[in-house]
Amino acid sequence: MPEVNSVDNEPIAAPRNAPLELKLRIMLRNWPYPEFREILSKEAREGKDYKCSSVFKRLYGYLRALELHRAGLSYNEVAGAVRGEVGFRPSKSELSYWLRGVCTPLGRMSVFDVHQPEVGLIMGLVLSDGNEHRCYHRGRIDHTRGELYNSDEALLEMFREVCDKLGLSTYRRRCETGFKLEYWRAETTSTLLYLLLKRFDEFITKAPADVQQEFIKGLWLGDGCLSVCELRNTDLRIINVVSTLLKMHGVEHSVLGPYPPCGLGKKPMYAVYVWKQSRERFLKLTGLTESPPRLVQ
Image: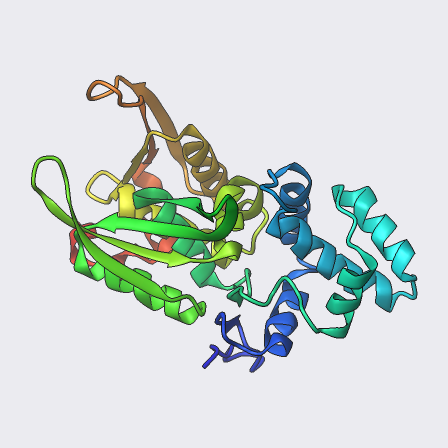
C-alpha cells in the first residue's frame, strides 16, 4: 500500500506495481517543484544515452508533453518543443501512447514525493556510507541502484524503514572485507533516487528545510562523530554542500583539510567541524540526540 501524508491525506509514494494513475498523481506533484524540474531537465540534456534515449529524457518528455498538450498544443508542436528543450523528439505514436496512458515511462518505476523529509535522510545515508550506480543488461540501462554498506543493525533497519515509506524494496546481503571483517550491504533500486543522488548538490540546497535537515542527519549517521561534532568525507562536493546548508540554518562551523590520504590509493580527507557554541543548535536541527546510542555523547 502507498504511504499517505497525514497532513493532506495525499499519497507520498507508489511502488513499481502501483497503478499508473497513482504514480502520475505523485509525479505531477513533483513536476512544479523548481529544484526537481531543474535537475530532471539538466539530466535529460546532459546525461548519456545507451542505445536508446535515456529514461530521464523520456520522463522529462512525458511530463512536459502532458503539460503542453493540456495547454492546447498539437502533437507536432509538443514534439518540437520537447526536442528544443532536451534534444529528444518523441514520435507521434509514442506521444499518443503517453497521452492516452497506454504506455508511459512510469511503467516500471517506483515514485515518491521528493519533498518528503525521508528523501533527505536516504540521500544522506547513501552518500555517506554507500554509492549509486546504473546497472545494464545487453547494453541497455536495466535499473539504477542505491547501496548502503554498514555493520550497524540500527542504521540498516532505519534504511529499510525509510525505503518502505518511499515505496522502495530493499535487499540485504552479507559481505566481507579483505581483512575478513563482515558487514552488510543494503540496496534498493530506484530511478528517481538515482537522479537525486547524482545531482544532490543542485537539489538539496533548494529543497525544503526539513529535507535539508534530514540530509545532514543522514550524512552524520554514516560519516559523522558527535563527540567532537565533526563530519569527515573524501568528497569535497559533499563537504561544500554541508557547509552551505549549515550556513543557511545558522550553524557556525569550520571546513578543515585536506588531510593526507591514509594509504595508497586513498583520497585526501576533509572535515566539517561544528563550533561548540553552535552544538546545541546543530543537535536540535538534526534531532541526532534521538538517534542510535553510538552517536550520542
